[in-house]
Image (cartoon, rainbow, N blue to C red; front, side):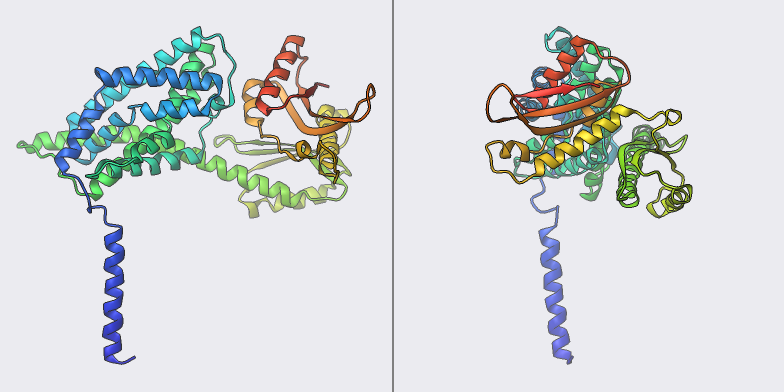
Length: 449
């Protein structure tokens, strides 16, 4: 390449670099720093209108969770002012403003207590006491909640530092979902279910901390001015207090977030291991249980039917677990139809029925019931696990039945559920009604062996 060509290429690269840098420059359209700080400080307060707005939002969200209405829950999140004090804490940490950090923490604690008390009172007096799917979804945090909170916080503080305010803030309020977990915590207290309460507060804490972290990162990236003190000793003391507060808030959340990530990785690796290593012509996995425990070790418990696997074959499968990053995981394989191995026959019957239903629904038929058979049913395992801890297994499928009292065929949804203890008639009726509502079907038959 000649020298003129090299210069031309160099100029072109510089133009491209400058163009890209300009497009991604967060300093463009940045609002005045004092205006941003004043706005965030104002939104951190919970007095007057902000406090009443919070109470109204809590009641709306509680009703939405109670009646399982996603639209109502979204409406409550749109008017919720909870983002204010969290962003105030992040701004205070980023600008060395100890007073703003204390103010944000105080107002966040007040808002949290008020939200839990109001939602508890609502769920205590409401005649509807069933835990719906929207509510149950807020009791078990996942790694995706961490990512959403962090990315939502980044979007929120970026939008808050612009001259022209956009519709990003309402979107952030919906995405980060601070309001529903607090309402779920209130439901847990009102119903005496502390599992719900702890799971929901855990999700709320994770969301709050990672929104705060993202706010701090953007504030430092935009080089907001730090607060300085005339007395150097006071400045060092304030910085030390801020670091202690940050450590108390961040370190537990990092530990909890690591646990969420680690559990997700374990479950994904375990599912891949089972699907790839237990593909046999005459042997089938009819039930699987994945138990995550960092202190005692993880465990995979499988129930097989069909031809029994030899000891050498099982040893070979166990030796290959390290390839799936399951080296320290205990593998339990239950097989053979004998009482010593405590085989659960209801699981076997449920699995056989599931296979029959799947074959029936996948058959190529041309009748009015074909669309129903092709309609997939939602996965409600996590909800059933929380609502009915004594339920061991379940299977659900849309099937075609022959009516003996009239000509033609009909369709219904068949659910087979296995319990560890006898189920009362009233509980059967209640479960049947809940399944019809949750699966959104008109005709449902519940079988409990």
